[in-house]
Length: 140
Image (cartoon, rainbow, N blue to C red):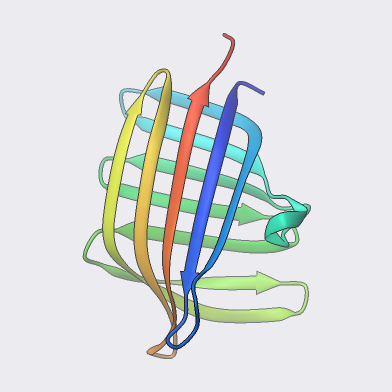
């Protein structure tokens, strides 16, 4: 462990109250002049126990890769829509993310990342989402 990571995820549905999940976990934070990489294990709270998440930030692009009980590779670029395979032990689906806004702040001591996006399947909106990561490097 070399970082404390706070993750706050909000999922909004058309006629329902938004669902929020917030948790704090230990992880890894790497930073250099080209960008940052954040790695952590998902928890029982997210329903993804056994899945490692890696978040790569390069310029105004954020890539979220998950491997384990869930496999996916989501690419976020502000104002762009991208497709990805959502692969679980129960089956797979092709989904899209339409990235509305990305805000990042990174330095050797930590990072703040905020992504607002719409998740859709076959051009039908599944949910409106917000993902916020706050990373604080600890120790060496």
